[in-house]
Length: 211
Image (cartoon, rainbow, N blue to C red; front, side, top):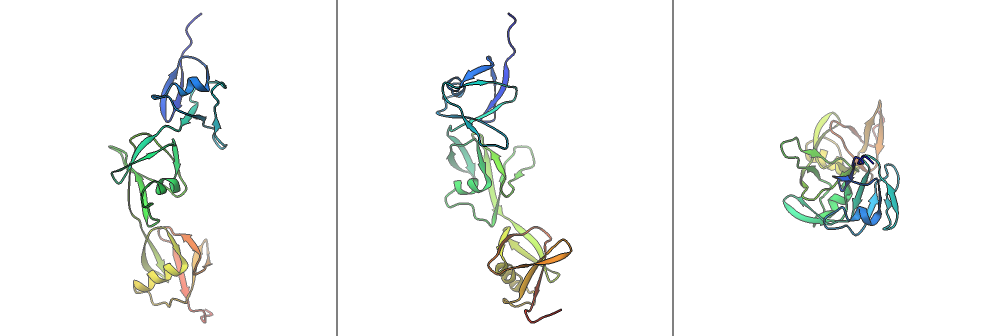
């Protein structure tokens, strides 16, 4: 019988050439060094499947698995251990002590490439040795057509007004704030927390102003 071509699969983002097209969970775990305690089949848009030791998996080209092997990643040059092949942006923030504040963004350090900013809610593939760095995010908006700079993306309505007042915008702390959405302005409550974007337009009016 002619030899079977290996199947290219990925475990924790590392390509592995599997000589057999059907492997048990125990055999899949043994492909890592050291062998993983548990292994999951990555199912897009569905809950990932924990593969049992005696369960047989029919391998397909490009199939992806991940394990709970310990991985060392670096955030601002400080090493941390994680046990997942993927983390959400919120989970990555919580890895550090103290957690990365909302005023800071996170970037993945890509050697010889443009560093990759981590977006809100993004799921990040994690490999041993990955490096990340953080820094304060500044977002420039306008309030009553005057420029205002905010530190971080998440703010309450009151915080936006307070920042505008501190930067010379002639409004009061009890003015009614609204944000331009499409062609209309939508009210923003004092305690309402929103994510701001560059060039967002806000309007702050005296509650007695009917204009």
